[in-house]
Amino acid sequence: MSPPSASPSRLPIAEVLPELLQQLDRHATVLLQAPPGAGKTTQVPPALLGAGWRGDRKILMLEPRRLAARSAARFMARARDESIGDTVGYRVRLDTRVSERTRIEVVTEGILTRLIQADPELSGYAAVLFDEFHERSLQADLGLALVREAQQALRPDLRLLVMSATLDVEPLSALLDGAPILRSEGRSYPVRVEHRPGRERNPGWREQTALVARSIHQALAEEPGSLLVFLPGVGEIKAVVEQLEGQLPDKVRLAPLFGDLSPAAQDAAIAPAPDGQRKVVLATSIAESSLTIEGIRVVIDAGQQRRSTFDPNSGMSRLVTERVSKASADQRAGRAGRLEPGVCYRLWPESERLQPFSPPEILEADLAPLVLELARWGARSPDAMTWLNPPRKHTGTRPASCCSCSMRWTRTARSPPMAKPC
Image 1 (cartoon, rainbow, N blue to C red):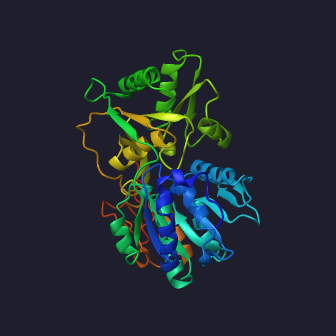
Image 2: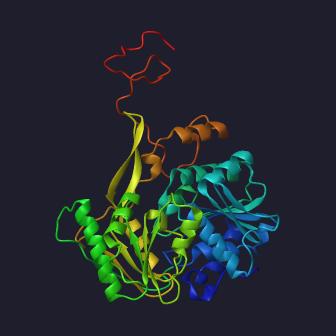
Image 3: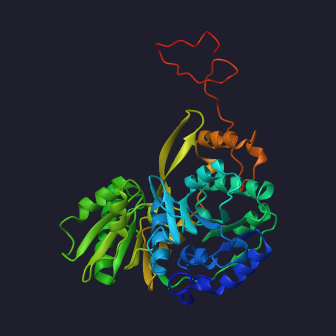
């Protein structure tokens, strides 16, 4: 068996790897639940390289974000003393690092859709791994439905491994014909959680920004190491940067981290701070899972997230800012215990009750891209596919239409209703 990445004996996932290999020998589909910091992202793919069922085919692992895909692939490549693109490579939008020698490909979820639409058998792959499936993106749900159908109809030998930190896996196991569930217990290091809310009961963002800045100063004074601060969006990150500029010690530098940054800027944000310096990483949910930022031992969680919801009445999507779920809060706290014991400051009252999970994107997103992908796949109806949560059939007021084709049109004071059928 090829060596897994660095020192798996120090990571909790190492205890279940032998059983995982045995289960994948006997079952085509397996579920793996492991908390943040257990090591599933970087330890499982290399452990599968020596499996007999793999033959000369590749291992394909899905990550929910480009930054996580690049980071995981580079970590596994470094652990093997190889360059990226040798045994381990990645494919993300506008950036591909693979070669004929590559046997582990880390890709984003949209890349899987392209691969399986081009080759429904996934003939070059022995296994598909869904990492951080608890995030329940629309692309992940679609990918699982497509891979499951390919496995059942074309590739019964194709292994399917669904990995998650916080997902309730029993319903998923039932959906996948009773797939066995493996669990890895414990983080790499313990994380102490403290609740430090502000004085205002319903603070505006100006007060919330001041609270975040104040918490950063307190954490720098009370705790060693670098900080990871979770904020809902780019606007809030820039507001905190303005609050902190010129107020931090010389040896502390700010590092924004969000999806629209260039890959080079993202890589710089997650790089370890130089010797003798500390870093304060101000991040959106991009840093919530599958990512280790070296030197981080303090997490400050503002407790908010921003996500897109689709309004079927207007036919448009909008961004909403809301309290994070308990699952997301646990994921964020886990970033502090990746490499050493850490602490997480939560800026909301301990008495506040969070919803267990964020709603799956498939229940709230615009489903037009999903419908197009299913049509390309040849599925006449979404009901023919395997869904953990079937796409919602909206029953709200339908937009005005010209005839039975339901083509939408906009009624204004100067535009009378359409008179002719299309």
